[in-house]
Every structure is written in C-alpha cells, then in structure tokens.
Length: 223
Image (cartoon, rainbow, N blue to C red; front, side, top):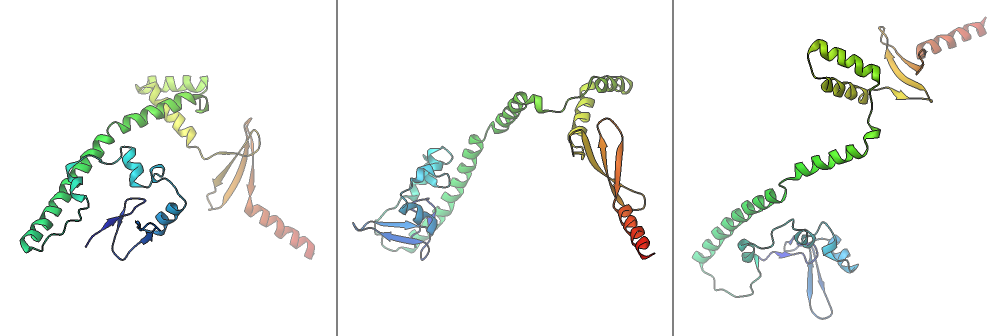
C-alpha cells in the first residue's frame, strides 16, 4: 500500500481518501482534503502559508537534511515478492521511524534553546518602554513601607512589589470621574452597592430598601 503526500501541504494522503486532480497534460495532483484543493485552484503559494510543510522547511522548523529522510523517497522499481525481504523491510521501517522521531526531538530542543531568555528580554523591554502605565506609590506610602520594613527587618522593594500587586488586583472599578464603585456584603446575606468619592464619603444603594419603599407607597395608596 502506497501512501502519497499531499501536493500542497505535504501531509499523507491515504488511499481512498482525499482528492485527485488530473490536469489536461496528464499530470496528477493528490490532495489530502478540500482545503488544499481549493488553495491550489486559487494559485496560492504553499511556501507562504504557515500551515504547510514547505513553509516550515523554508523557515528552518523541520529537518531537511537527514539520512532517514532518504528512505521516504519514491522508487518505482518493481521487486519480486520475498517473505524474508518483506519481514526485514517492516522491521527496518519501525527502526527508521524511531530514529527519525529521536532526531526530530533533538532538532526541536536545539531550535527552541534560549526561547525563555528571549521571552524574558522582550517582556523587560516592553515594561521599560511602558513604565508610565504601571501603578505608582505615593511618597507617604513609600515612607510607611520603609518604616514597616525597618520594623520587620525585610526588604523595602519586596513590600513595594506586594503593595503594587495588591493595587493591580483591586476589584474597585471607576464609575464617574472621581468616583469608585464597589459591592459590600452585609451580615444578613444581602448585597449593597457603594459609590465612593476620591475625596471621601460614600452613598450606599440597597436593593432591599428600594423594595421596602415601594411597599410603603402601595400601603399609602390603599389607605
């Protein structure tokens, strides 16, 4: 059983699967799915599409020079059937697959070496370029943290990082201008919404109170 490769993406096109296109000059093109067939008819270049084997090989993401790849070459040489030769061929195919898989893992590790360092460098560059967007501590907060660090005997920078993380993870949301909106859970299980001003003070909006006011109005109407 011969398993051909897709003409467009390079994936295996199994027998009785996929699409075969016969051109007027007699050349046949085998496609693994309709997606590859449609892209071929639209005259797209497989080297410019990231999901094809041709693109990955040109980008250096897959092995191109290896002795195990030579065994996959197509050979139209008729060979007389021999049981021993058939058994040796099957064992050789399994062994070649293991060797290729091991070499592909080694190739991947070499290709991805240093990726973590590059990601960290890019993240630091991004933070350095947008430092003005990060939350800042006031002078009074810094002095308070310095005194607290002197009492506990810890590093001031560590306390500042914890304080900034707490500010970044705060659930308070900005409502109108200098106002902040947050939710408060009462002891009886109810929830009330409070709108606070940046200059102090706040007004609580209780849903249960609104219902009680409506009930009072209904009683007055009945009287």
